[in-house]
Image (cartoon, rainbow, N blue to C red; front, side, top):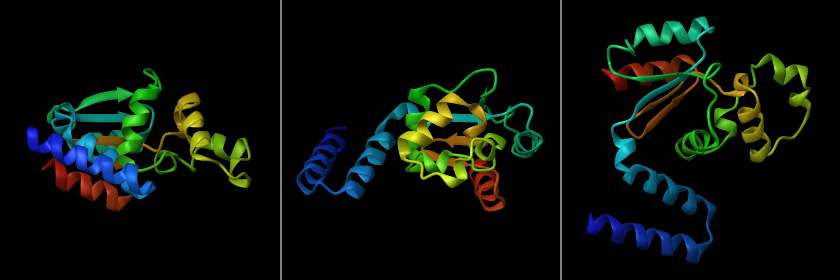
Length: 157
């Protein structure tokens, strides 16, 4: 643990000294990976009315494999949960669903959105979270693209 603290301090100083945003992002991901509560985490944020989510949950045997399931329609994600997802995914935009009906209804495709906008929309309306979001140990799998689901299946084996 002492070595981890030294590495953390060195990384922190390097990031502060350089002011490099990429370095800061890497440091945040490093700190996140040190958090032992995350190294054994098995959680899926999903929508119970989404047939694709249901298929994925069944495909990976989520319940049998001990995943904690959170239906984002009945149990809204918190700002803290979203922040943890963002640290792992790299941005709020990576977590944002541009397929959501409200995305088109609100004319968001014609607007230039900031990271704060993406965050606020996700917290305000559950359909803006790209789903499912699976956290397995210190890795995140966002969305239902074929490649993402294949990676998830391989990680769950």
